[in-house]
Image (cartoon, rainbow, N blue to C red; front, side, top):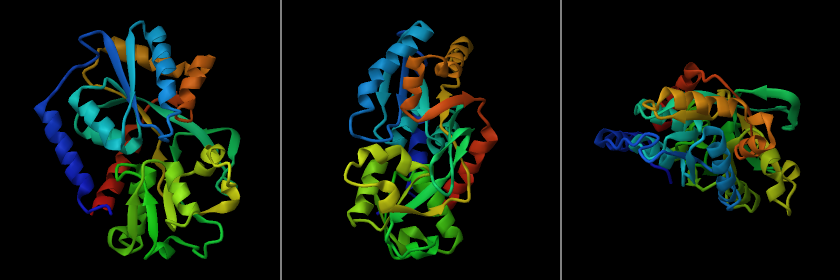
Length: 302
């Protein structure tokens, strides 16, 4: 069960870590420390950190070390402590780090746009935002967000925009407090959320739009499009991942990193790297878009 005030307490704790002040920006040893949050925990993404590090090292002309964050809060803490120079950051995690003066978005990712009716990707169309999605079993009699009252729901970390913050906030807009009116269970990744719904342990799960398409290959015993249905898409649009660096990073290095990401789609190694997060390209970061997350975060934490 997720307790009220968890998100605020976490941010306050990270603020103290930032004030305590470790600052090792890229880096006294000449090594760029990079971190990202895996979308699943089956080991497949960890195996790709080496090739990604090699790719960045070749493009930037310096040693690169790539690590996986264990969860959303870990990458915020790593940026706040100065242990990480470059983060591929989920939007809510980026906002938390930004508020600690520990991250500066130099780019925002672009994603495939999904058809809201079929949840199939729309060929040639890309977007800088996405929506949260609530999934239930296909034979469920639930038809609206209000029907989640009294149900068991699998969520991601309270620092996940689509996996917690946005659906929780929009349920509260309807007068439902998921923290008291539902039973929330935090799990490690989206495939685990889906599995919990499919096997009846949970009634619903909070994921991102297009999750059934993205993770279909991981479910050989199920057809996710037949066995799960979309109960709800969030009204609020969520900005995509931020490519964020330490604000005190050398400007020349910031530009090299920015140029590298902007040209990733130009070669196969770059495309392989982008596939780690489902990114299709990168564009200028819009800080105003990330500001909306703060409003949702405050509401979800009330």
